[in-house]
Structures are given as structure tokens and as C-alpha cells.
Image 1 (cartoon, rainbow, N blue to C red):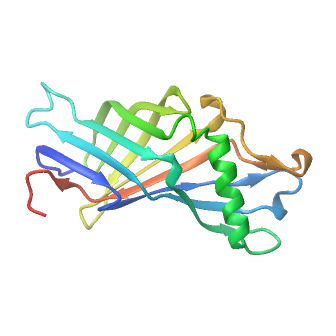
Image 2 (tube, rainbow, N blue to C red):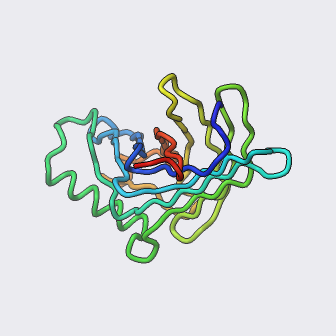
Image 3 (tube, one colour):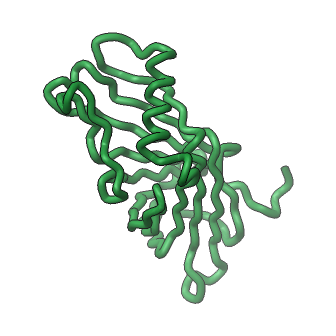
Length: 188
């Protein structure tokens, strides 16, 4: 990764944070695989001048109340606006947004390779903190792309199920972050 030393912001102004869910179970064909976007999120990246004396650090805060269903694929019928609204209400309930509005990630180590990095850290979700690994790579346009997988049950979240358990949301949901790095001392 070819990022110069400095302080950078990341977030909705320069990037996107997406969540992908997948369905399983005998009635999986009835449900939808979902693409969800966090529309309010922000973060901070510190790249030290001397990585031997100070580690690279990453922190992100996501407003779970702003999760928005962008699309649903599969299923026997397309998602309606009512379906989207119901899914968002269910997400808020499962994530206990009324008690734990924000999810946070704080890196504990960053291992930088040529054009990629492995970011290990702590994800706090629904009031519980567990380790999470993100694989990050630099794209040709200079932005960075990170992917990881959150196994909901590790944070005490019971994955959604319907139709008496015949339709289930896969326990692991995929996280994708694509963002530019906006230097703090850079204009505008």
C-alpha cells in the first residue's frame, strides 16, 4: 500500500460501506439475498512516518439506524417498498438499535504488504466486542477496498429465520468497504 504518512478520514463522503446477506434452508428460494448500505459512517486512519515505532491505526463508527436495503436478489417475487421497510424494522430489532445505535471497529494490528494489508481489530456490535479481520487492498484509482465476514452469533445476534425455520439468514454476513483516503490537512 502506497499511502503517505499522515492522518486521513474515511466515510460516507468518500466511500461506501455495504453488507451482503445470503439465505439458506429448505425455503431459501422464497427469500432474498440482500445488499444493505450503511448510509452514515465515519472513520479515521493514521499512517505513521516510522511504522517501526508507531503502528498504523484504523477506527470506524457506523450508525446502525441508517442501514438501508438497496436490493434483494432471488426470491419468488421482487422486493416491494413494504418488504424493504419490514426488513429494516427486523434489522433494527435484531441489532437492538434502540439500545446500541453504533457499531465500532478499532484496529489492534495492521500488517501491510505491497498493495494490500490485513487489519485485525475489535468490532463492538450490540454491546459485545469480538475480534474481526479485514483484508484490504489498494485499487488502481488509489482508493482502498476492505472485506470481512461477521458471524452474527459470535456477537449474540440470532440470525433471522422465517416460515417456522425453513428460511434462514446465513450466520455469516459479508462486509465490504470501498473508500478514498481524505488527508486531514488537505483542502476541501
